[in-house]
Image 1 (cartoon, helix red, strand yellow):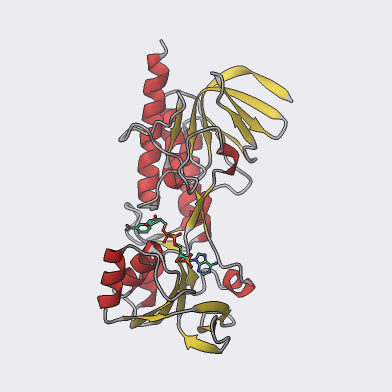
Image 2 (image 1 turned 120 degrees about the vertical axis):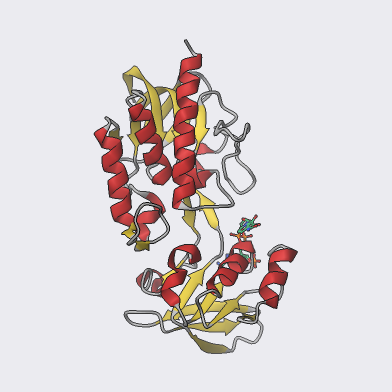
Length: 312
Ligand code: NDP
């Protein structure tokens, strides 16, 4: 292990819209932030195509381009980047320690913005057709399916919300669920079941997403009878949950039962650890939008700045 000599004012771990926005604000506040970007910088938006709902881009913008702009803006004000993953943190003593492989960095404040990962079914056809009709974000991609038949998989609140939202555009939405009852809250179930454009297919698993260059349907299997059939569709939305990227934070900062970081003192971004703040999807179970992530990154940088001032 090699320990860095100087103590950083702020280290930002994670590089989606939350992390980059935190970096822009921290850098402009002369905190000279160090960002641990990860090997795959940019976060979930690197996986999307057109982003039409980020304010300021009336014609829309590609997800990777938006992230590249944010990174450049953070760099312009002096953010330093390490393109590796954070492997461990030690918040047991202050200043905090952040491990990147064999290097150890010390920081007075840390902003956690490692995001969340979409849960996928794990089918090869799902990966191959991602962005070509397969999506995990109705808010992002729903408008591309005007007048189309769509399929949503999942039985929780996310699936109900996605299905309801998609009926604004789709000709029909078929919800495929592996059980015969939903996990979603009563109100969300009722709303979906009352929606004339939504129908349900129960006790059914997705076996394959069909299509060569674009989605044409899904092959499904009834888990009780083992009968297989095909449902034609132009878009396939996976809504089986998200997983926060907090594996390396277990036991280091307070997490809820699903692994999301708990903010102790809302509306601030403070965690239960002094000088450690969290922003973006890693602490957000409700909104999960690029613009809300960016906003909370701004809040975290301001919180870190105030914390550093309080040390004097
Ligand atoms: P959940 O974990 O609640 O639900 C996931 C659903 O996907 C379950 O029905 C589950 O099936 C199904 N599923 C999981 N893995 C697979 C798989 N491999 N194949 C097929 N189906 C699968 O996740 P959500 O994202 O829906 O919700 C997460 C949290 O966020 C919840 O607390 C929810 O209340 C909240 N939320 C709230 C919203 C709101 O209030 N507006 C909107 C969205 C989310 P099974 O039931 O069989 O386990």
